Image (cartoon, rainbow, N blue to C red):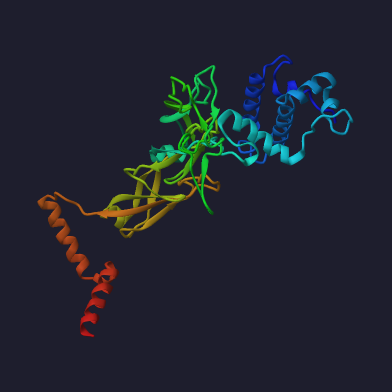
Length: 376
């Protein structure tokens, strides 16, 4: 399979300067870097292709041979000289060399790399139960650090460049030896960075990053619950010296509801019922998240009785059918009775006292148990 033109791979013309070639490589390498494209074989192949192109075009001797003879001029098997790509070792060394040159990292692992991934951020989003069950899209405002556009994240004033520290040679540490003893310390000049900025960018003061408030649109899927997280890749803090940005994690918190209580897939609610309806039976209007439904209550219903409305719960975000709505009826004692109502209740009480075991089996059984407890 024939190789693509190296200039085409980097997206530059044949008259491009060394700086333009280096800048194009950094942009392409960041785009196809394996850390940004996990389990993506196509991106990994392009990343290798970009590295191979830069290895040739960044070397004056290899570039001259390539410009004159094409790929044959840099192929070690062609008999025309040329350096060759060097396989897996070149894959890592080239990437380290260019970022060591641009950002102060280490060539071939000998120098300290100051290119670091940005920090992850967390944002807590409060949702109503309805929003959590149905899903919602919301805009959020997040303060963060972004790459400086003026210096392209390098920290150096435009027209200047980051220099390798002359004290430590870019390693970030200095070695002090006294007799048989040697001590390594953080370089006092670059403070372990391996690079120094003699003329810092005015916009970011040499940091390569500036504070900015971003407004993002977040889609919350249906069925989320408190503790669930939505990950926004690359929306965290910008990395140092052009490193990849971190991620933003949106943490979900579902507020308490006035009517419903959620337990996983199921919803629970309490519905008050008069003792007349509980005794004689009746029909209740019960609230659900989709509107009101009718619930038939059989005669002689006791307080605390649970009724299940299937499919009226929550469909979990991780899949599966909707849960159920569990309705607990609570018998309400009448208040503000008139004299006539009290009189009627006393008459009713007299009729039930004559056959207590028949009308109040739980009450009679309970007091029998209490009596037996004290007798024992």
